[in-house]
Length: 122
Length: 81
Image 1 (cartoon, each protein chain N blue to C red):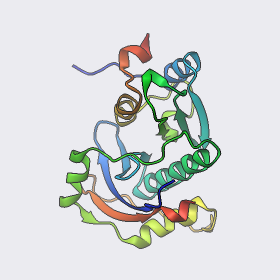
Image 2 (image 1 turned 180 degrees about the vertical axis):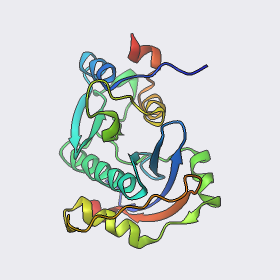
Image 3 (image 1 turned 45 degrees about the vertical axis):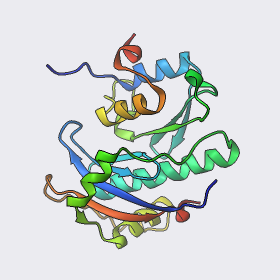
């Protein structure tokens, strides 16, 4: 597996699907949820699961670039704080207390773009 | 005109019939195509969020149907057949 673990994500509300979506630019996978954090967490958990599968079966591809139009939408998006992605990583790895729920449900028209370090999924 | 929805039961049935593997990822699912699917050299995977795969009647989001088409060449008609 190539060592290209720095990724970018676009998080937005889909009117079509009535859900928050988190789209990875380097893997082209899409997490979804009722709030931003749930969508990012879904994405990170999914990428981790695919990486685990690829370790057992190297014929499974992990990396695939998202389409240009998806990546272009990040230019007009607000910055997603990295701390937010950290919380999602912690929740994926079971290192966030269940007694401390976090929910982020901004105005539905706002898009966010941020960076992710997928090395934390390995 | 709205497009016909695809349910998780219909997608799962297609996967079972054509040798796709379905792996759990928390409440989500990972769909992996069989080796050599439609002549491709690489095997790709598609993450399906839990709201789309919690039960047979769950509606699969348009974003995932688009992803299934990008990765595996699957169309709605094929999944609904």
